[in-house]
Amino acid sequence: MTTNSLPRILVLGGTGSIGQAVAQNLLAKGYRVTLLARTPAKAQALFASSANLTIEPGDAEDLPRLLAVSRGHDVIFHGINYPYHQWEGTQERMTQNVIAAASQERALIIFPGNIYNFGLTTPIREDSAPAPITKKGAIRVRQEQLLAEAARAGRCRVPNVRLPDFWGPTVVNDGTIPIFEGALTGKALPWIATVDLPHQFVYTPDAAEIISRLLAAGQPEAYEVVNYGGQTVPSVRAFFTRISQIAGHPTVRVRVLPRWLFAVLAPFLPMMKAMHEMLYLYDHSILLDDTGLRRRFPAWRETPLDTAIATTLQWFARHRLNQNFVPAVPVTPPAFETHPASVPSIF
Image (cartoon, rainbow, N blue to C red; front, side, top):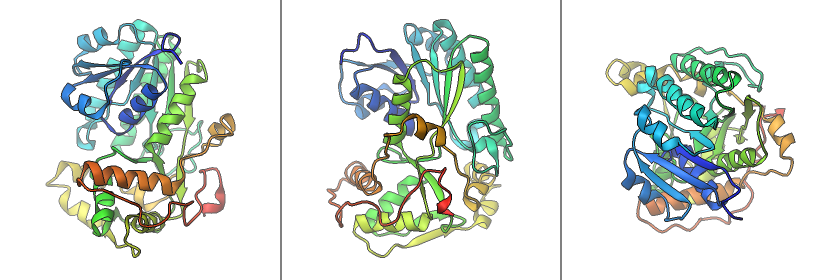
């Protein structure tokens, strides 16, 4: 496949969890990809050299720089995401910058949405009305409103791909690091509030594949919402059990972080305060209904869960712990069945 007939894509947030996966997927398929990176050396270390990859120094908060870099691009992937406690003001301002950049090219903006807009609504359908119950949920609603208004005014087109919690190789945050490094070193795996409810997770290479398939499928409507729920595990405990087994620890040890801990630390630590209001996501199973996407791509199948777990453990072993890793059990279909969100039998 040559690159001449493929759109040129600017990836913002390309060193982050979902942005990195999307950029890697698109490069593997021959797309021309530009990364705007505040730390170009970090981006260069994450990506293999490719004739189709251009790394530009700069910050998307610098609107003139963003406008200059975005010239000639057909698609902008808006993967910029600040730490929770920095969301106020920054998320909307960055989205306005991205809209301005897309408007000068009449470009497509791919926006990875999430479930915060909907509070306790479940299942979340593509036409579900926003019902945020947190500040961060309200911020996400305003971000999506900005994108929808710009698209309907003809300034750009926007597929909003809503996703649940990320995990996978290169996903390094305060949630995933202690899970996968803990599994490799025999430590207890941490979770918040309860580990015995169904929960949706999306393996980032699968999310990236869905995004690239949507891109290849053709021009979307001005503003289009697409839900992709990844896999719904029957409980976080069951998920952790399988991670531990593949890592070589047959008996899982789980450490549940209680709600009161966040309340106590919230006045002293901005991140804990930001997390405190999001605890409802751990007390309830909030699920995306992705029936429409699965009808659209009926042959689509997620990476088998065991394979995804083994790949992620291998990445953490090599890149975080400087160790070799071989799965302790044969990597077969998971010990429990996983379902798309539209299947009610998980309850």
